[in-house]
Length: 115
Image (tube, rainbow, N blue to C red; front, side):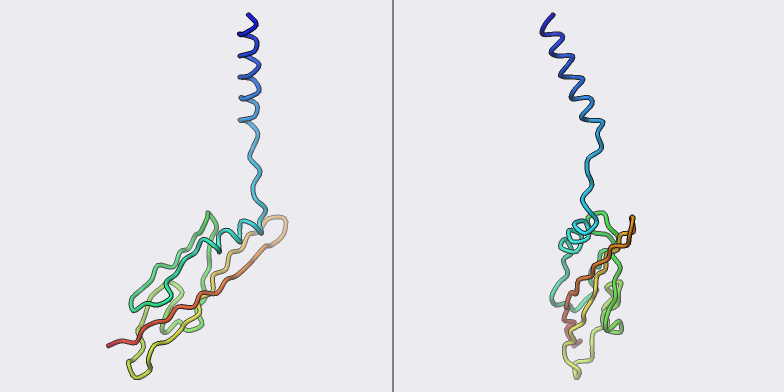
């Protein structure tokens, strides 16, 4: 009987702890984790994958030279006479909760000139 009561008490405690919602990370940590998880190549001569989500967060992109490397990862190789072109892609993660949290990270990608 004693074992039964202990077992029931243990099940009750475990069952109640399963009902408690896990604490979510704070927005700044979530943003930093999302930005740190993004990986882009340093050099390319073809289209690249530019993630629109990272660690469950939405990622928005901006290119400082969309003619060569667009926000969606589309590459237009520069003319060989121009040489390779380095483009900065900026990833921004924004979370709106009780206030707006936003952080950005720059990625430099060199687009190799065409043949």
